[in-house]
Amino acid sequence: MILTAFTFLHVVISLVGIVSGFVVVYGMLQGKRLEGWTLLFLTTTVATSVTGFFFPVHHFMPSHAVGILSLIALAIACFALYRRHLAGHWRAAYVITSVMALYFNFFVLIAQSFAKVPALHAAAPTQSEPPFAATQLAALIAFIVLAVTATIRFHPERAHPAV
Image (cartoon, rainbow, N blue to C red; front, top):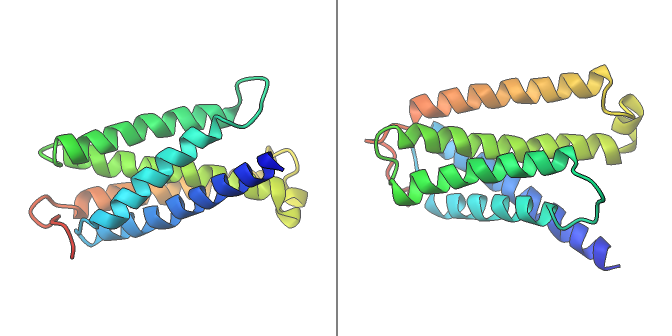
């Protein structure tokens, strides 16, 4: 019962992180800093990664590696934003690591969808089949395009907090 509630909370936090992350990236693409959305994205994405380590498992899993990578990306993003105030190359570091953290969260969403949604599970029961690989590859390419485009468009002179 407690594990079910914890899982539900973890999923809700993850989904809020993904939605708010897409809003933040949209703001970057528009050259805007969306302070409230950014704080929500960073907070929930950190919470998602941290809570992921509290599930009962008996060995190191790929989800742990993704969580560690996400936390590293988030640490850099937070440092670039809150300590370096996006000065110089820290702007690009912030954009790239923010998009990376969103991608890691989305990567897990795809994996969990293939594990839990019956139609997707039937298409790739071991997550090593072509439909799963193609979906993950398409997501990776989309996030690389987002990261590059956002880095180009999120100029320091235009990236003032939006009201």
